[in-house]
Image 1: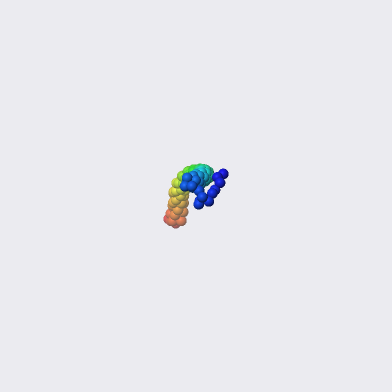
Image 2: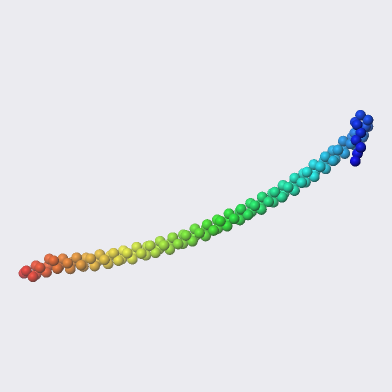
Length: 122
């Protein structure tokens, strides 16, 4: 290494040379530090990018699963609604038949209680 002399006995050239040498060393150290910093930042950036990619993939998968669930549930709801409407139609038809039969029963009952006794008494 350089032998450092006190400034008072060094020539201007020696002082300039020593200063340039120290500046070069500092510059080299700074470049190494910058390279190391850049390497760390690149590594961290790649790690963050990877983690974001994983989160994005999981999020997309969750969205697709939810969409599948919604589609399936919507189909089940449509099927149940159709079954309900068929059952309602069948119930309405049965109720109409019951009302018709009930009307006939009431008509026969009326005949039994009103018309038959008046014919028997005549």
